[in-house]
Amino acid sequence: MSRRADASSVPDLVERARAGEARAVARLISLVEDESPLLREVMAALAPHTGNAQVIGITGSPGVGKSTSTNALVAELRKQGKRVGVLAVDPSSPFSGGALLGDRVRMQDHATDRDVYIRSMASRGHLGGLAWTTPQALRVLDAAGCDVILIETVGVGQSEVEIAGLADTTMVLLAPGMGDGIQAAKAGILEIGDIYVVNKADRDGADQVRRDLRSMLALGQAPEGSWKPPIVKTVAQKAQGLDEVVAEIDRHREWLASSGELDKRRTRRARDEIEAIAVTALRQRWGDVHGRSELDALAAAVVAGTTDPYAAADELLDTYSD
Image 1 (cartoon, rainbow, N blue to C red):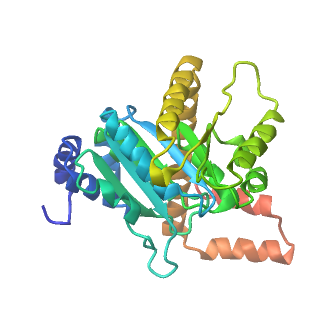
Image 2 (cartoon, rainbow, N blue to C red):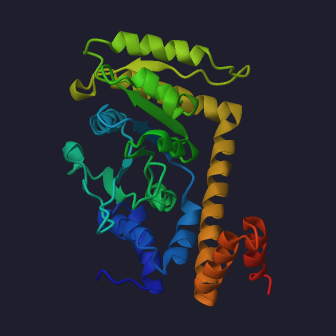
């Protein structure tokens, strides 16, 4: 099939993706990233086949071994016969908007495995460690039959917390010798982690990081019956401790289902996705119809003190009711 696609090709692409054809999956994600005019048809065709995949977010500061851990986790999940998708969100080139790192070199161990799909996505300047189109790319991999989808974020500090809104289970990686105990508290990731992993645990200081984490987590006022995040030590480069990580992921999934939290998280995720799409569409519609001149005029009035930002926003919103 040529790279160009039309509405009539969408059902065929979706069927081929559901059959596990990597090229079809790649094409659908490209349509998502390019914000293709066919995106509505694609999402409509995918909708009946989504909601089955377990979504795991992997986050942490640069240098803690996220890519190595993701690679090792994929291997462990494949031992269980699970089909795995990986979305590795890379920093964007400020010039091209493309991913700087490309598909992760460390994950090429799985390049020939038909049941592993790895895709790098450019964040394109979007804060939060994720690409704006990540939720739609998730839907593609979900519909394509992935049992587990791993999202590895760029590792950008405080804005990493966005991953918690997209994943069923959020795994936070730390490592000794990086001041991560203190950094975790500063970044607010102690509030989003479902599982904490102290990677590079064969180094000095790993036990101290674990103790610091345990002490910080103990300070939180968790409601009765809530999930208590475990702390697991790993050496991802040697594939040590990954079986325990998978066991904790499974345990968390069981808790999510039994507590009703899984439905709550997924409903919240869908709500945020709908809101983002609606706000983007409104911005585009307003720009197409009114251009930027009206907004510039309102901004100038706010600067001059002849109006305030709330009144200006109300006037802008009134343009949609005309």
